[in-house]
Amino acid sequence: MAELSSKERILRVLQRQEPDRVPHFEWLVDRQVREAILPGCTDHNEFAVRVGQDAVIVDPNFRNTPLPGDRYLSEWGYVAQKTQEEHGIEVESPIRSLADFERYTPPDPHAPGRYDAVEQALATYGDRYAVIVHLNDVFSIPRSLMGMEHLLMAVAADPELVQALVEMSVDVNLAMAKEVARRGAQFVYTGDDLAWNKGPLMSPRHFRTLLYPGLRRVMQGFKELGLYVIKHTDGNLWSIIDMIVDSGIDCLDPIDPVAGMDLAEVKERFGQRIALKGNVDCASLMTYGTPDETVAATRLALSQGMPGGGFILSSSNSIHSGVKPENYLALVRTVHAFGHY
Image (cartoon, rainbow, N blue to C red; front, side):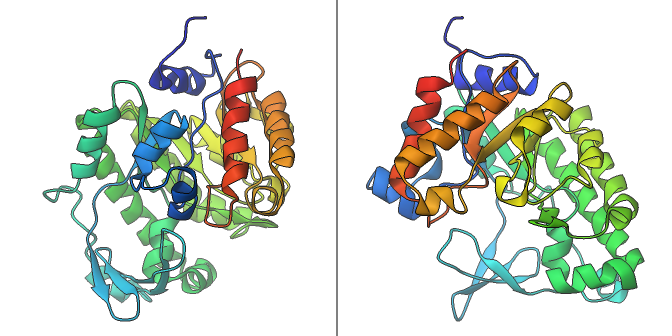
């Protein structure tokens, strides 16, 4: 097969076909890892291209107002604390009750400048690389607006509020999806984690009642716009994975090995319906292990995921600040060396 462009390679995977080589990209490579590998390369997407990834990731532009104590106020109305990673943690949230929700106004999906970064990424990389726009589906925005503890309590105590937040999240993200599709984007991913290592963040019954209808609506809306959708969620998904697949996604990420998600089993059960992305352990192996161990884990993931196509090789989440740079380089070199069809 003739060598494909990175964009063509990912298109074939999302259509569950064999490309020339298994593609690779990460949602995030932390600045400390980037600096160790390519000193002075401060731009995430420039780094991705130079290190050999097949996609660049871009977010719509949302305003963050600095606050004292390394905190900031998001345009969504929550306060986040900066961390050593490249993302903050929500520490104050604006909604506790249905009355709070009824007074709340989300950011305008059509605000001037909202898609400046998307437009720039498409213009710079869109011919050869998959430009993947980060949106949300049904959980991250409600979690940010209520805080995790209050949201999970509301699942039992105030399901009407949870449903209202889910519907708002779906509406806003479908409006943003229309905007990015109009600008020429073909790929989106949603980063809403639905589980932890032992299972989903709520019972499968509550998931089916409160989240699944919105998940189907947002995924079907993305598809109606002609967008390919990669759904990210860490954790043990076995009790809800059928619903996630049935929602209409094109690809599931990251098939979390630490949470007991076996790539070979997921491939066997769902590989005819969706593509898969993952799943080299970044929580333990790439943080504490050796390059040789990373090579072995990468080759195992290739052997399990690549037969028949429909597979993207990546870490089991992202390349966070604790990942050893030499281990990430070992992953990249291995997929380029051994990922050919």
